[in-house]
Amino acid sequence: MPRTSESEIEVRQRCYQCFRPMPLCFCDAIPRIDNRTDVLILQHVGERFHPFNTARIVQKALHRCHLISGHNRRLAARHLPIHADAGLLYPHADARSLTGLPAAERPGQLVIIDGTWHQAKTIFRDVPQLANLPRYQLTPSTPGQYRIRREPNAHSLSTLEATVAALQSLEPETVGLDRLLSAFNTMVENQLEHPASHAVPRYKESRQSRPRFLPRALLQSPDHLVVAYGEATPGRPGRRTAAPLPVSWVAQRLGTAERFACRLRQQHPLPAAALEHMRLSVADFDDAVSQREFCRRWNRFLRPGDVLIVYHHRTYQLLGHIEASQPHCLVLKSIFKKWQAEFHSLEELLAVEDVTLPASVDKSRAGERLDMAVAAVEHLRMRYGKLLPSTP
Picture (cartoon, rainbow, N blue to C red):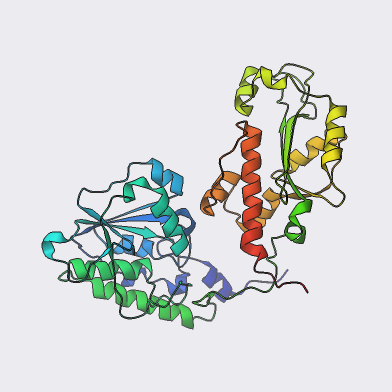
């Protein structure tokens, strides 16, 4: 087993305030600023632990600063501490420039969205408390200096640069803002010069190879991709648990949106709690079929060369428990583990990736879970499939 050098260990150790490697920590250089304008930062959850995120630095530096991180839905659901005299820093068509704004018209609180440009747009769209806030914008005359992260254009600013520029317009007499910007620029220079730097180019470059986490089968013709979800019989308290059997099974062929839905006849009535969890009723089983009939219908739905996509491997095993056809299978949970290891549920990953779910006709839990899985697969195909080189 290869040994880890002392220099590699030193680089891996991080400061858990600025999240920089210890040799590049610059916390001691961050000034404490007694700002007058209250600053509220709404941070997209995807930025929370990003090593090059600057909102943490702003929070550490400013005396009056509140940082809230969360999924869009959670930010939308909570009562945010937005003051009556707040203004939103957001480059909207009707946004006023902060430069030269009369003192009487300056906001008493500045709300700033922290995230990529796409993430910021979704937070602005999804959080209703932001809708009626007066909007303000910056007019930078020079490019931003955050060259260790990609930006949509040369004049885009990091959250730190934007906050400093805004406060310099609103309260130019405040001491320490120049020092904060200087410390930030020094951090950027040190990062770029460091031999172990993992800096990325400022502008996006197209990738010419398939991401390692993405199975090639997921990028084949959608006419042969079938996403499925199955509800299983619950365990019975006090009894030895047998292999679970499918209660209901739903599937969708990506290319045609053709749906398969079938509920299976149960040997024992399902408990009320199980029905409630599955969002089903006793009447929903009036047209339930036998295992044999299910297998016949399932075989009729499948085509030669189909690839089945499920969220969890246990779902795929349900087919084996009743000897139904089991095409080649891809497990989304395994794919996500290699892609975004810090997220542990389909809901969380979809929220972080800002995937909007369509309105579902099927109100059962199985139908909802299928819609989520379909949305995840389509997102993966659209986001990464178009990055691959075209085949002749």
